[in-house]
Length: 267
Image (cartoon, helix red, strand yellow):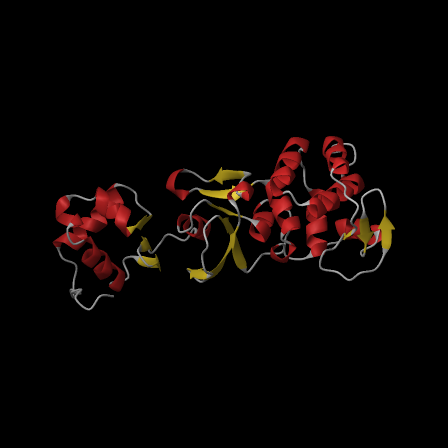
């Protein structure tokens, strides 16, 4: 709070006016700079002081510097994507949202083209994962109007998780998510091309032959064209051991039998 900001003991006319404006225009959250450009001149001239007063009176909640929300608004997914540019709920958070895991993530993962530090919103930890614009694809909108947010679709969520498994909640959970999901060939091909990650394509191609051989044949055929001469581990975070699969240039440091078992495991 700026030292020059006067905090009144009770609500004054302009503070009430700002609250009424937010109510009339159904503004649930806002960026201070953008709000100032919309307000009537009488309110816009001292909007910083008005907002600070309402915040001190607990009639607004500060999300981060310059961003506020109504105290009864608690959609953290919306707020997390609102404060980060070109962003979507992703990784483990998206797995849970799409029903691909029952393990609730304690952290909300946000994929964004912006570099942004981890933060807290309404008691939830928000982890921002910075990606190149070429990887910032495959998002859909959930919710309605200002209460909507961007989230990666099922295919993009799985590609993201295989690309960054440390944000996926665990290898076994990721295998079960892939095995139980309903996926489309075209999206998998499009998204994996954008990522240009050969190891990822080989892993997903091999797993497609285990769990979706008939439905994902086009993706499998494409993945086979991308196989290079270098062997990669099926579990990137595991140790160097296990059977070599020459067709996919993969080393099964988690055996085929274990992979099939992971798909059947109860949470």
